[in-house]
Length: 224
Image (cartoon, rainbow, N blue to C red; front, side, top):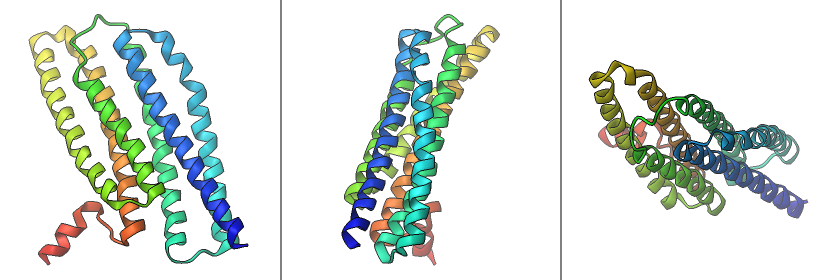
């Protein structure tokens, strides 16, 4: 019975890793389409989004089955409840990546407004955060998880810099407003993906250390 339970937990990990890999792939393909100005690349993404949605259902059902039939305790219970939240974060990342694809199709209708340097940079960081957050989960490594939280600050900084830059373009020429706003929305979706990866990292810290760091609760406790 114990061995079978361990196998089911490994199956759960494998499904979460596969889902994260699909999210990384969608982000990469959307950026490739944007950088190469090739709308045909976006068509390859819809099947992956369907796969993410199906995995979300499979993972949710597996988690509920494990909770109902195995009645896990201690760290196994924390892992399964964390997996349920992580499953939701990954599904939301998939939705945000699809939002990027939809916005990219619109952007490609305009002449290129500016070099895209900072947007792909944000996307690379977000992809790394998704991958590392799941590695932290599988290896139960809270040190890696804490480094992911620091990376989120870098994504936020790039996003703020991009917003100021695009605002300048809009002020210089009203004809730039629509294209600039679409780029802002792409960046916003990437920033939200990074936020969800941070959520996963925070769940890993709770899983491993039993500590909640959401909403900077550690600093607040230190003040009290």
